[in-house]
Length: 150
Image (cartoon, rainbow, N blue to C red):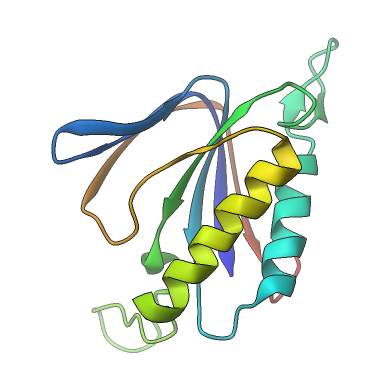
């Protein structure tokens, strides 16, 4: 399971010209799921995500988490995070989980994240053609893979 986290001042996702989710200060999180992912990956990534100290404290030092600042989260499913560009110029998505595996994992990730934050999060729609807007704050962008734990 892979996530790309962007600290944002604002972010939104639009589907069919309708805003499906929007946040102010918080994190835009792109989530990619592969067949080998399980509940352990969800648990580890959610814990890392809500406690990652990437928001400024009173001295301007990145020392507080999204939970500490009562920030919001916009979660977007993104199978392209598992693209392989090893061969040729057309990315292969063979490692990305099929919907029958990915959708339940995506939903479990949402529930776990909401429980850890103690509030609802905003989301896109799995498999939809989404338009994502954001104002990256910093900018701060971090990628995390639950398999490498780096």
